[in-house]
Image (tube, rainbow, N blue to C red; front, side, top):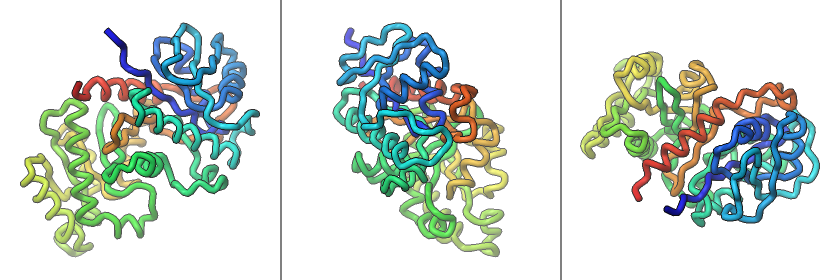
Length: 328
């Protein structure tokens, strides 16, 4: 039986811990994955870590052999010297971006089965003149996807965000009825992909105490509750709005499968508080699977060889799980 295409792994910002966690993960062998990035960077990291691993440059994913102690890599950036660790650099920002775009094109063509991304740095990309605030926006633009959402998942809770990388002021404006419906529907679809036959979705309120009956804001009654009711009419098991300060407690107790959060920190703080080792970011609404570890570039420890690659391993495992769940 013919094997499925390998996964694509994007190198991330070379000034951060992305290349390190990739090298540590692939050093164990057994992963059908190809790195999209810089040969010079990955070779430097392998030597720095003292790994008995070879970096093998290939032109296409189909050329990968997946031999033991070998990292298969497609060169997709012009960076030739490893930049300084822990510093914002336009060169590093461009290299990270180039890897993501190349991997997207490979996924769109079907030569890779999905993408696992190492962290990039928004300031570094900005210094290179790249206008996107994060992976989600890059992926949406280069795939032409109209409905995308970020799902953060760990062993205890899963959350989908209505708004992502924007100011809190703009998040309040952007969390309109259409955004609520999109997030609830994507949460339902994502939950089914993760194995929940009928995901129980709790929608968090925007204001303290979910508005306290209109005393602390009217968004719950004017926007969120009508969206929940419309979703239920579509057959989605949605409820809310629930107070944001208690909804994750109930989800962790098993009362809900997925929480729809209104803005970035409302959703990410509970997930990250439980620890980054098992946290995974999943982008919903794309034509292919994309996951990433739930941590950033960690400039403060980059280059010291102490980065924990557990979350990256978990992101790979989630990607394989999601790909296996796709209809044939």
